[in-house]
Amino acid sequence: MRLDGYDISHHNLITAWDQLPWFPVVMHKACEGDHYVDPLCASRLPLLKARIKGVYMWLRPDATPDAQVGNFQRQIAALSLIDTAGHLKPGYILMVDWERTGILPFPTLDQVTAVHDLLHGLYGDRIITYSAAWVAGFLQWRAAHPDAPV
Image 1 (spheres, rainbow, N blue to C red):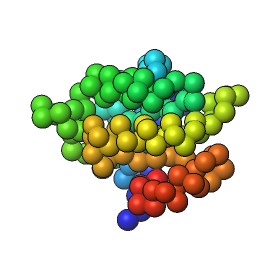
Image 2 (image 1 turned 90 degrees about the vertical axis):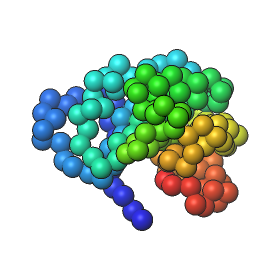
Image 3 (image 1 turned 90 degrees about the horizontal axis):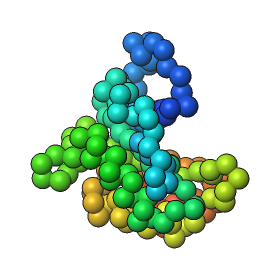
Image 4 (image 1 turned 180 degrees about the horizontal axis):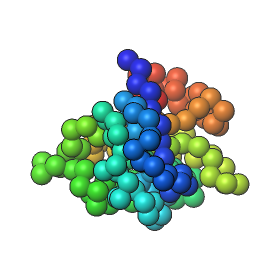
């Protein structure tokens, strides 16, 4: 099944929330690397119009998978996206954004795999990957994970 959507972050200036188009899926950046937190995510997440809302982490090559997932976990908890049983609340998904950060190299296949393994262990199967064929290593990762949502 295909679901179209878009993602936003603090980089996107939005002045008329009521004029944003409705899409099935809308994501907001929660964090990047092992310490950065998007300063607008908490205030904007309730304003997103979508059947499924989500938050994403921007994966970096210069921080360990454990540290990056730890930062993401803290933001997911701070946004109250976890229920009392420790599960991701209904209507939400998580995304790993796997691209290039400035002049840094792409995150490695090992880093991406470790992040996905950690997130799946914590939150189950509501994890998607944002990437593309031009990202170094993506086609190999996709071949090894043909059923992973992208």
